[in-house]
Amino acid sequence: MKQTLIRKMTLADRLDVADLIYSSTNHWYQTHGRQAIFSGGPSVTEAFFDVYEALDAGCGIVAVNATDSRLIGSCFYHPRETHVSLGIMNSHPNYAGAGVARALLNWIIDFARNEGKPLRLVSSAMNLDSFSLYTRAGFVPRYAYQDMLLPVPKDGLDITVAGLDRVRPAAMADVPAMAELEKRIWGISRQKDYRYFIDNQDGLWHMSVYQGDSGPIEGFCASCGHAGCNMVGPLVAATPAQAEALLATELDRHRGRTPVFLVPVDCSPLVRTAYSWGARNCETHFSQVLGAWQPPSGVAMPTFLPETS
Ligand SMILES: CC(C)(COP(=O)(O)OP(=O)(O)OC[C@H]1O[C@@H](n2cnc3c(N)ncnc32)[C@H](O)[C@@H]1OP(=O)(O)O)[C@@H](O)C(=O)NCCC(=O)NCCS
Image (tube, rainbow, N blue to C red):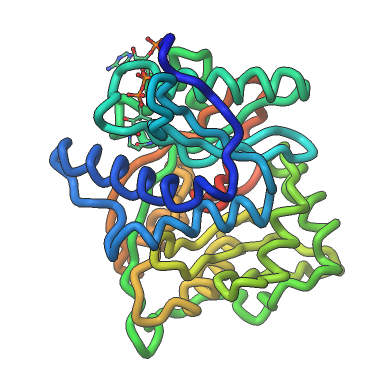
């Protein structure tokens, strides 16, 4: 689109980007027969700018209308040791279908190519505008997830789960083992993200690990308690039983709330367990990858903030 310019996001864009994420996402879902994704006003989506700026300073881009400099699109990217991931993509509804998202995506694809790394993201299977944006650009939907919502009672879930005694809070010293585990199970590594969760400067995060028999950890799981993203994950575990213990532990930290988590569709034991706990489906997502990909050899659950897949 000739009248669209792409430039780096700056601190001065913070509120405009939060407004755009809030209104364009809600607009898309509400005009496609679904409920708004965000509620409480655009201040809740400031978290995307804040978290991404803290994690990857300067790794945001915006699309502006060349004639009047209006901000009409935004996206974030996250360079990691094994790959680049793409954060939340938004274009203004007034410019829908005009190539704004495509221009932003092309910029990030060029960045990932220059880095020589695959580009990964999580995209809705129900939002064909977003699904097609990526598949037309060559991404392959590699893996599918059930998005599940689970109301956690104020007194906690009334469930019995094996292996809870193996789960403990993560420590910075666990980070190299987490990276090794995720590389083995899911082919990626992102130590920066794990450190960010454990460091928890903004008080939103928590992370647990599953301690194996003979020392090394066999799983980890984080969760986020923000109003704009109440979510459990990312989760990586060698087995569904370990994933279950990690998921139960992190869900318990969200008593009185209804967090969402993305369960791999082919992980039947975990899907069945989630239903038995009272979880309900609310969406479906794909892990989309441009470049090399390996199927998981264990359980791998992604998140939207920060984008991990
Ligand atoms: C999804 C969203 C980003 C798309 O933005 P957009 O600026 O309208 O998208 P573009 O105009 O750049 O078009 C995207 C591409 O998808 C294609 N497309 C859209 N619907 C399609 C369909 N049903 N079949 C095939 N292709 C389709 C378009 O032709 C275009 O491809 P092209 O550039 O190769 O021609 C925008 O609707 C949005 O912000 N939605 C709300 C937030 C959201 O859902 N974000 C995605 C989260 S990852």
